[in-house]
Image 1 (cartoon, rainbow over the protein chains, first blue to last red):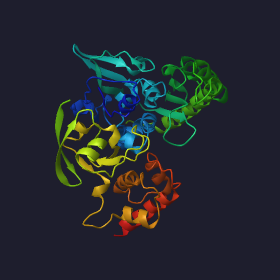
Image 2: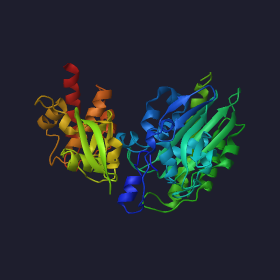
Image 3: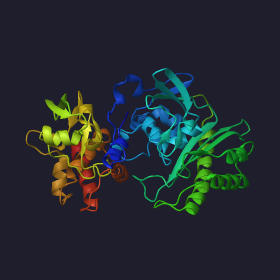
Image 4: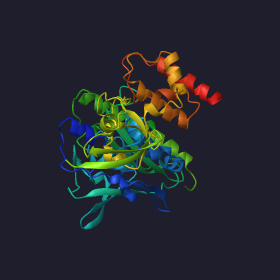
Length: 266
Length: 158
């Protein structure tokens, strides 16, 4: 099953995958759609990521998720790539996944016995591996509306400005209390472990504080400690750990700035 | 393998062709429809030399399965010139020597057209980002960027 096929075709050409049957999901209406009601946004799993980045309302409410989706390849790829494909491909470096995880995005999964809802953070179990059965696919993603005094961010490290795979990716989301201190925090890292990892120790370090330098140093340290990366051509273990700390810290600061600006209703 | 019947509007013409299900749109355009402007460079969506517009969106034809094109509106580089007159992008590429071997040129032209269709007055940075999905091993890109800027100016002044 494919949406934009931007991963499927290269894998078939490289001989890493040889499906007997290919099913194009894009003719199913729910799978290519972007809508919201008072409670949540619903994003069809095969919706091209360009639709997300071009939607001013979605992008102002979830700038981190929109920017993460907008980092997946060129304009040519953006017109095909989707959140469903980026997630189900199972790459540890998928840019949209840390941003979805910090926003508690849920996947609605359809199969022969009906639909079930799975947290995006539980979908991928290892590189190329997901909890989906062979006869299941993701129909859409549900994202609760961003509350006031909340913001998200995603940063990635690549050695160039465009068209590369994350060496490290870091997503963050915070909700501030009325006094400006951090009430809720979520941090997730990509490309530093077999799956995207949450960093509860960094989140705990932030809660109740105003992100002082000491707190941010603790966030960076916890993020580096949460990494279990590989050495490869994109980066060494030591480099990835260090960069994960730096990016986590910076993403938190951007999320806080956005949360401060988001003081009203949607 | 069974052959599938595809109807699409290609460069303004209602077009019908038969294709095998696993064939890429790029190969179908080249081998079944006879439009050889779009080129295969990498075959994996990295180089952009197969860029075409599908329903006004620039896409790598090598990543699209031909049956997906059924009912779509497609523009290839062959559809850029009208009534024997080159599109301003083509004319500016020619005059500015924005090509050497030419393999990447059809893809650059289609990506540049997609950009100018939605943003008639792009900055240099916007042009460079919009063309980031197209690789050229000859020109060093600067002449391509300048040709797109010049074409944008001409189109705006028309």
